[in-house]
Image (cartoon, rainbow, N blue to C red; front, side, top):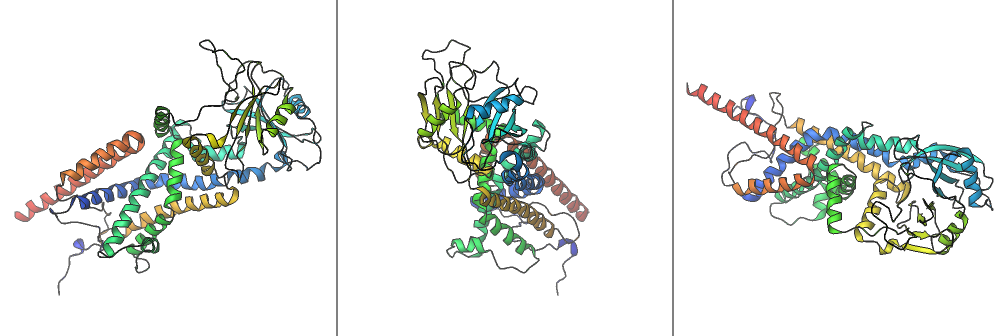
Length: 487
């Protein structure tokens, strides 16, 4: 009987390589590098992913929570008639006579209150004062702060900030961008690793999607079982995970800036709606357009005395769903009316109208927008849980909780692979064989990705330093043991 010393026993792992293999192919070397990157990212970035996923699960239900919490403000008794829109605006202005109207969200007749947004300099940047008016009686139902052009109310805004930066401001945004960057890489690398694993277990036989989605046979409680569940679960949710990661990155600080630069360079955005009533080109320093109002707007707006006529023109032009209206900043600017994104609507048309004449100045049909502008709008409202309402919110929350489960299973696999003497397991994928091409390909790829996703590139450099330090330490211990044995 052969007795194995305890220090030499390891839990069996087909992916582990502890002996030199100088003849390993280029594909095998690239696979080993990819495995090590997946290992280190999963080990060190998983806490960020867990926090982002848990806050994201809450964020997914934010639109529904908002409706529940502020039901008294945003709903109104259904009525067959409504006051003229100007009277509703006047009722709101009576509450805040010193504030200018920034937006008007007329009721759509389905039991919603009319929402009047005011530019309020006493609030933080990006916030406006929302006043809710019963359209039938003009009764004020309350006022709340409103965040962003999407009209987020305090509860949804608080959850949004928690998910985005943990209420830490710009420093906190690093965590969410790091999580989104690595979530993208982990999903793709995991899919490649699982594909290689399934193919290797098939011994050259053809593989079908069923083999990737059902997992491999393994005893419950073993690392192999954890790995199979981890991989199949990730495969089932790959598309949703990639969608969350990509759309999240478009809002990030550093990667988002790079995305914007590429989009601007390629001229992928559609031209904005033109709202200027002045035909000639404005002088330098003046503005010829109007993209909406915020609390940072300056100057006094013209009286909102054409609201009903403007709304009627917009309805005749085909904007028949819930809309928001932007009053002009001055006499040389048109009204802007755009359709709100609400559940089960997949487009948003916009129109510019001269309030004094009722003439349509410009139209912006969603069907005529560039592909990027369409995808961007759909991606934003998918990520926010708006596009398909509650079913989408449940799907997003399920995806977020799946990410948490994947991280936990990853740590379980890591712990199960530890040597029997109790020390921590090291990275999978032995870098043997001295395939220079593999290192060059990996380095070039890492530099390209790191340049576009800076936080990922910086963290990848840290992982490399850790790996080199651990490798050097292992080699030093081996040399010292060899010297001791020789003596």
